[in-house]
Image 1 (cartoon, helix red, strand yellow):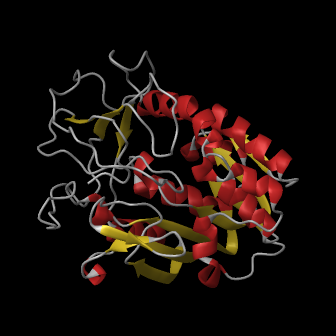
Image 2 (image 1 turned 60 degrees about the vertical axis):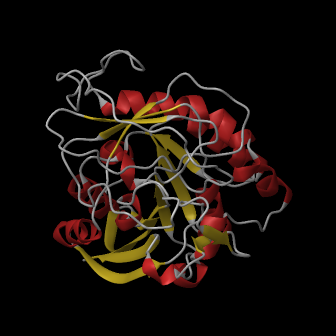
Image 3 (image 1 turned 90 degrees about the vertical axis):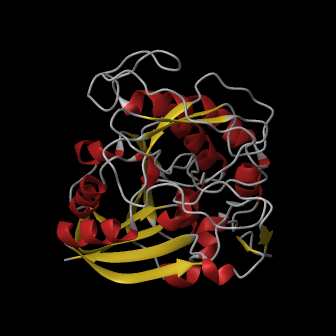
Length: 338
């Protein structure tokens, strides 16, 4: 089950050595829309045994690499301008309407509460649309992302929106090297972020270290049960095909497109991604020193995760047309630093 399916793009999942199943993954960051089903997806031979997750680097797309970040950063750097130019990210609306908020932030406003005056950091912020939205709600925001090209677009957006937001370039695991430990009242993470991280416990440790005592994490993410589903079946069945839990090996995906409406073509199409069970996320946060204060599962997602089986509501959320209560598609979680 892919979080986003791409128009005209063939998808190839390649399990790494010792992976006895392909792991569910997704390529969604914040809010994709307007995709049609992938029509070709078959596993291929595994990559070279020396190229899963070791530190280092190398060329990518067709040649061995030793660092998953090399692949993923190249993918995001190349796509950032196309994402910013696409109507799906509504960059022009941010510039034209000073009250405009991203759909993801608007969806969670009843749960988010008052953030005015809070010092916040948005981890894995990509183009910064959610970051600017939180700024418009009164938070003093910093956005962090490992893609320099994405941050260039984020800074341009903030400039057009007259939003005083700082953007910092770093891998999320290195956030404490560039941000003040214990300096934040709010850590925010939007939909489609955790799939890029191999170790959910390490992520939870970063979150805890960034928060002051009493500070809170706010997370909306795709549900791992959704990621465990196969592509849509013609008969409408929901078929669990991929692992629900975090595994050491990533899934390696080759995808020629992207999740927004665009005519752009790309060369860097390979990514490494992971799934994380809901219990794994909660337990990692508790062990890192946070207390869970909210966990709400939603029967909807802000993109069409199961093309041909869903209906879109007036708020931009998609849910199953047939008995939507069968499937949790996303969740919202809050936790407070002890």
